[in-house]
Length: 379
Image (cartoon, rainbow, N blue to C red; front, top):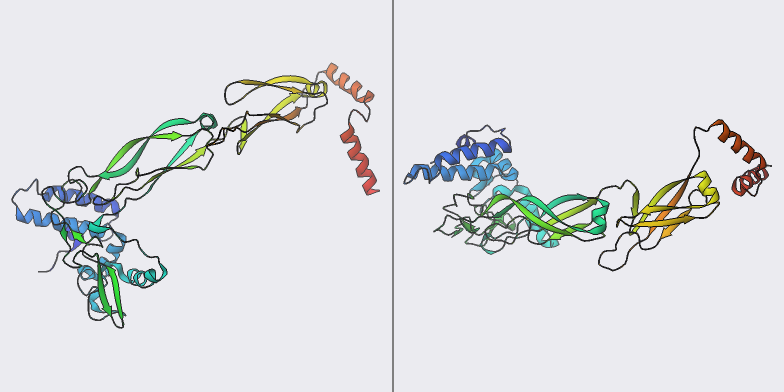
């Protein structure tokens, strides 16, 4: 008896996207679920067919193979036994040409796809989480609570994917090896088993909660310790906090990528901090003092001598960022910017003009020397 068309089983068109497929599968699965149709063999059969259809169409590679070759893509002598690699033996299944070349050359080069572990156990995928913190938080360190959408092991089947009371059975095609050999002309090619997709086992009665996957979607709350002095771009790894593995396999890891927001007053270079401070022309000329509030909340006094020029830096030792995994701390550099007076009154203008008239080269050695050197150069 010919197998039903997968698209017709789910009630979707061949152009249906992932969202449409998922919605149609849920609707059909609820309708024919064994729990809603007890002792109904036809409903149970329909449920298994729907599950098989969805598992095939949700995978882009499997779907492409199915669209081209139909059910023959996953049966013995896949792709009809024809094509440029046609011949006797078992077919190439859903892997197509990518599996052929990967299996031939991947083994030679030490690469290729990672094999699944015994019993179909697969390591879960790693996850990424982006976190942004302030410079103050990077200075002091903190413990942050985050919520991460991930997959966890199914509590009904304990991650096996099989309905409670049943167990996965050894794959009849590969006899549990997860790989099969296909004779193609002069080659004998080993490839992933098309029946169990390399797991070595098949599930006859899938778990009703996870539909045979052995894991379910859930949002988890995690506590993350951010050390003092952490830098922009640092990656924090939480071992085993990624997606749960398939069928009891080990979980992946969660990687938290840190970014530090720009600060209004401080710029960071490694463990050192830089702060530009505007001072009046008179303060720079006569000298003076001012207080700077540092990241730890304390105030440090900066004394500038008379005749201070724009760009002059003053170092506050130990007032920078903590250096991770050490007891050392960077420095804070105060850079002076001299502010030119604006909107002068008549009296202020008169005083400045008088000052300019009585000024000598010694008062402005940089400007006097610059123009003298330029004149000498061009003459």
